[in-house]
Amino acid sequence: MFMNDNSGLSSIVDIIERLAFRIERQSDQILLEQLGIGFSQYKIIHVLEANPQFKQKQIAKILGQTEASISRQIRLMRLSGLIVSVINPEHKREHITNLTIKGIKLRDAANNILAKLHTNIIGEMNDKKQRRIEETLMSLYVKI
Image (cartoon, rainbow, N blue to C red):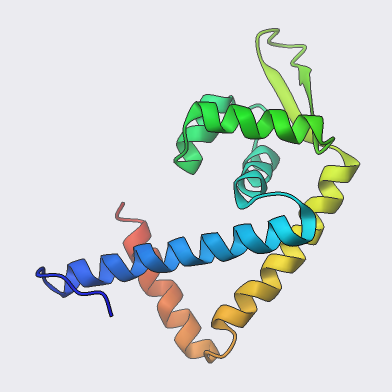
């Protein structure tokens, strides 16, 4: 196990970072193999669903990515026919971005694929243990 000179707290943070990295890498790999999209595009789809009027700068901030990276992913998604953008009739300088039918089908397929992957990762834990881990992680999350 990866250890450093700091206290157990630092070790916990290290484990969380490595776990998040591995889950994201596995998610990216399986989505690329089965659907031809990356995990970054999948996350953008979810942000756009929540608010199709978000600007690229807002999406970048939410996802912790650069604006250039988001711009490139959105351009690829538009070219692939997953999303479409139209000018907001109420605010001419804003764009509203929505999923196409193809994008909706891809999102649903991605949700199913990732649900299976995540079940494989934590599925062997009993419900009580899963709830305990979820509560612990949420208590850490709300402090950030």
